[in-house]
Length: 177
Image 1 (spheres, one colour):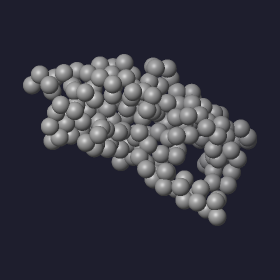
Image 2 (tube, rainbow, N blue to C red):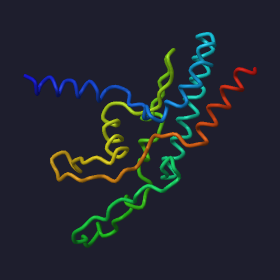
Image 3 (cartoon, one colour):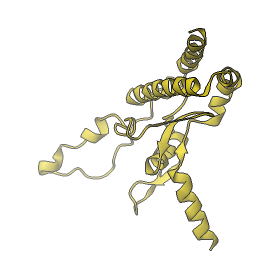
């Protein structure tokens, strides 16, 4: 019975929105929370939505550039071992050369959530599981019933210094206007 409850809890957790790391948002919340609390609810929501959409755009651009928030490049895909096929299937490697997370960075999967309490940019559902494996460098099966592999850490969601200054500038601009 306990195993069924754990599976149910895991499924419910997987469906929820997975926001950026809380330890990254703590410094922003410390000084921005006080400013935001002074705004009227509709103005606060509009400002948060504007910030969230821009953050999503910045995260998406960084994922497309295959960069971690600190500016380092993602670890490349691992080379596949084994014999190469001959004939029509001989041209392999196209997928390996393409950028990783092409669909993951689209607005369909990279969600924005704005509430009166704040904003969140992240993934939800099965996509959140896939993103978490890469974000944290976890071990996961390559195929549903295949071998497991420890994926290298590729930080998909995170704040850069430019993101911090963008949020600060948006808050100051909104308060001054």
